[in-house]
Amino acid sequence: MKKLIAIFAALLLLSSCFKEEEKRAAFTNYKTIEIGNDYLNQVFYGLGDTSVISTNLYTDWNLAFYCGDDASFVRLNAAANMWVFKTNSSNFGAAFDLNYTESDKRFDGSHGLLDNLAIDSYLEEVSSDSTWCSGIVYLIHPGIDANGLELGSYKQFVFVGLFEDSYFFKLAELDGSNPREFSIPKDPSKNYLCFSWNSSSIVEIEPDKNTWDLLFTRFTDTVYTSDGSEFLTGYAVTGAYLNQNSVEAYMQDQIAYSDFQSSDVDPSKFSANLNVIGHNWKQFSDQYNIYKNKVYIIKDRNGSLYKLRFLDFYDANTGFKGYPSFEYEAL
Image 1 (cartoon, rainbow, N blue to C red):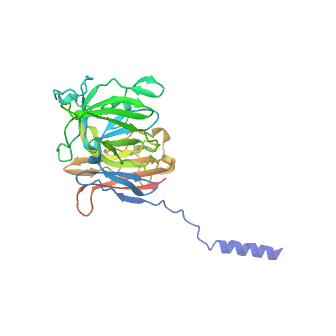
Image 2 (cartoon, helix red, strand yellow):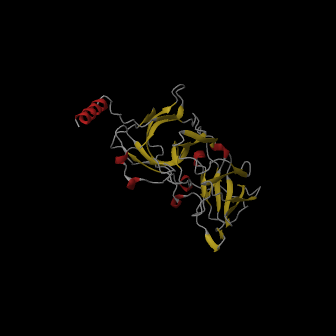
Image 3 (spheres, rainbow, N blue to C red):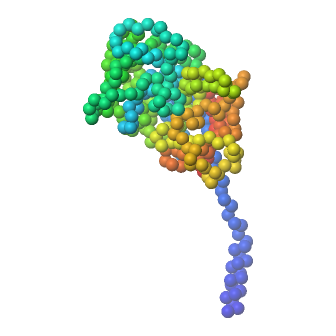
């Protein structure tokens, strides 16, 4: 018996010599995204992949057609700062004058909701497999670049309708010349299929909707002054959009980035709006300054949770703007 006690005591003494393993800190990812000094790049990023999924120029496309089975609508290329005038006429192919005011400009809302689209999303149901629009003509401006230069000329656009999950629409020049008809089939692997009227074809822009979480891009927003008394509609800004395929986020500034833990996550605050992250993590005053106290809590496409904050908007080597850097880690 004494021998057993001696062995047990020796084991206790031996175990006390080993230092208890410390909890390992979560790995922090530091990334810089190259949108570019002229904001030309659109960059799709995967949080869990810690990598860029794809990159394209925003000048490569004009219109985006929603591919989900829950709705059917068209979005403008907000990176190009596009707008439309609604004519309230169904006389496609006639010559239209630009007798509109600044307040008549219609932009897509940056939140991504259907109640604020430049091109109305309403479709009148005709049968189980087809829906048709009223045939209203919209005059679409192709937008302006970061230097304020126009990217082309106005086009007439008519959203004809939807037939067997394919969009039908018409395009013509402002004077009614060069009328064309197109069809765009929905692709369930993507959120949107993008169309270029320069090439008269679908262009590969958005990657598979199950492969990315954030889109870093220029886009159009309504911007308010610091006191909220004035605002600019259709103002070009640069920031991040969410992938609306299951990605959600919210901003919190009450707990420091380094202190925020998984137990601090508030599920009731998550939103799937496109611009939850947006551009308000920075402010311009002679130069761009970053709000490092703004911490974004993100649920990615796979349901994993992350915390993220921005660190800079300038390239560390050249000093050029358009290079947002951020840090993030899994919760």
